[in-house]
Image 1 (tube, one colour):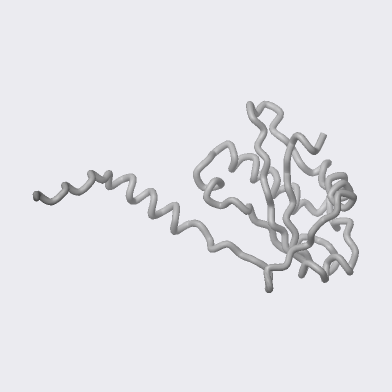
Image 2: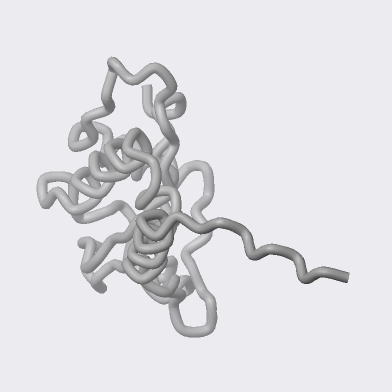
Length: 138
């Protein structure tokens, strides 16, 4: 039997795919995989604190929900924040726009410190995931 022909490749597409995968940082997890598991009351308090710093694109056809992983300082200010879904962030312009707005809100010093207790901070190693869903904010 004759060997199967190799699939055609697009050199530009190959370069783009390699660049995208190389630019994606390895997912970060807190030591031991811990995260602060928020109660609905805590979520409401954080939502109230951040609401004034989050500028939702009211002209978006389909508002995007975005998850942000935040590392907190012991005083409950945000030390660092990243988009959980990096693959989508790098490939979807609408999602990237929504994610950038969520990141700006989390990092905005006006909306810090976040309303948590020292006990909750310790339980999750100072790491939490925030869900920025426009349908839940207003």
